Length: 254
Image (cartoon, rainbow, N blue to C red; front, side):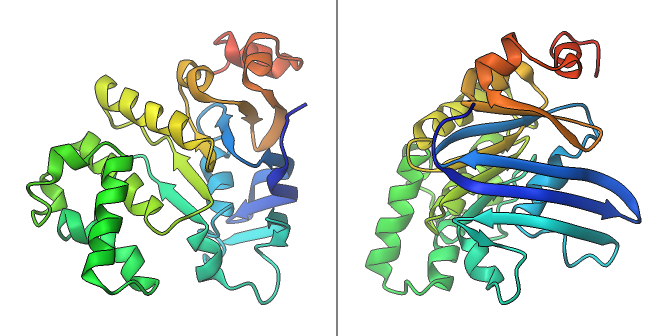
């Protein structure tokens, strides 16, 4: 059993792409706060599930989605849902960082400006706050007007995290957010996640079991589009109940 109040509740979720089933009858309650990681072989549906949580797939005519995804009790696929407001609740980190083609400062200020912050004093404070929160401030404070593309890959990923936090989301989604990073940058991102989990709900996709064990509170194992097992990280990784999970954590399934 997982602990905590559900922040995201998925009910009977099915996703078909080009008529092929990608996710099959997924039902899961993701607790408020903490880190929930999805693990499983390549092609098992992890990234597809993550994208359904942010409505990144439903505008594709080749994709059919049915079931419910409840965030704070509201079905994000229900009629009349204001998609922009819903997405504001969620920050998204991709496998590779994608800083906006603008300055370091403007990358952070971009979202707050869209949501109504205009005064330079307020924007300055916001930019500094979130660059400090991601331990970038001391590294970039003297070149805030320089292109974000000049940062290292690890710095760019922390910048993208700061940019996502600047719009004050409730949920952080990460699709293998450290897969393109070196070990030092990976450690910094993991440390940030551990610090953020008391304030945010983090939902991550990872293919690295060691990472899942280091940072996760709860783990969900997907296999061929189905949810096989879900529970506290140590329980799922060290004492899995299902034979498929046992085979995966032992390396028999890759």
